[in-house]
Length: 135
Image 1 (spheres, rainbow, N blue to C red):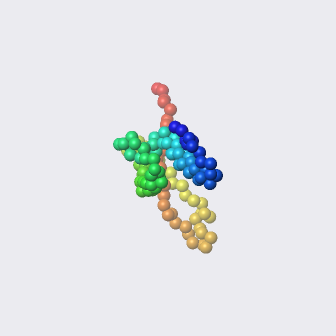
Image 2: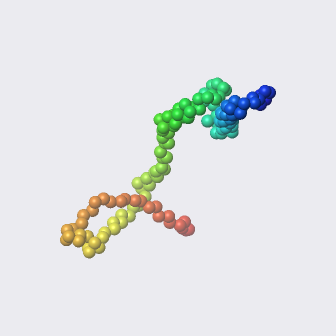
Image 3: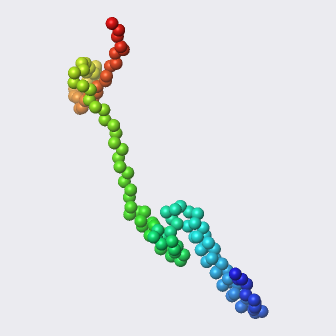
């Protein structure tokens, strides 16, 4: 492609106008090249406007950017909560020893003089492993 016309004007004003048109045209072409490079080498999800058509939109990138912004704000991907493993209870025939941890008397009274009472409790089971015995 030849971008330089064969007959250049002798009038400096006409020459300046022609140069300004060519510079603006060159700016548009540079933007198109940058857009095509981004679509060619960018992430796969950003390459084409419509995956069903291989034709890329050249002149509506502002509208496309707005659509992408709207789509990303509307779609919220909720990851499923991971299920934590829960242990099976120990068999009922195993012997159990109940251990209750009591607070000392000086910790059972509040600074105002009232007696503290239990708000909740934690119950846990721990399996004691007895080494193998011979004989």
